[in-house]
Length: 229
Image 1 (cartoon, rainbow, N blue to C red):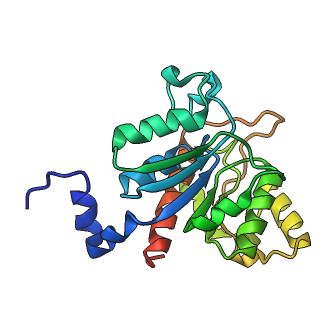
Image 2 (tube, rainbow, N blue to C red):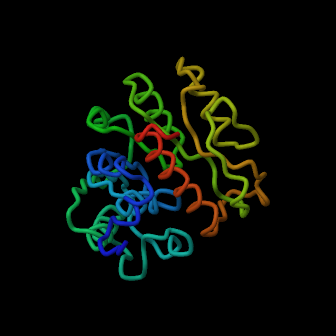
């Protein structure tokens, strides 16, 4: 069998299921250390309809770990830089962008049009807004927990928020969402079992854990939408 086209190897792995992927609509909120690799992975996997949301611009300190960006992207909005990257991977895709942060004024109702919402942001209040909204509207959802101050990619797992431990971000989310009456056992998360190896006000990070979390999220979403999780 001669493999010649972009999707040939993916089709070989997934069979007829692969043809379903092009119709999925996925929203990725936050395209930094964890999130920047997620749309890249989804597009390379056959997803053709993606929304990316992030209010930040590319900074030089991002370049040690945020795999989507390089020096040519400095001072560009991340959504614009990443959209250009995605269109250079394949040009038959629909990429929508919103260059702003999630807050109380954000129109979350747009997420009702999507088959899956992926949260890769590090702002606790914004994560709470997304988790609560998707839970109330039965929108499939997954959230990244803390990835900073860690190095061990083998300690990363997919679980639910009620089963996390030792992660300050997850602890805060559990507390706040429980007060809001959200069922924590229904909130999917990617979580590291590794205890932070250092502590400090400034979060340290290298390329390994954030991008592994992003790849894990992308894999989970595709498998879930195909009914293979």
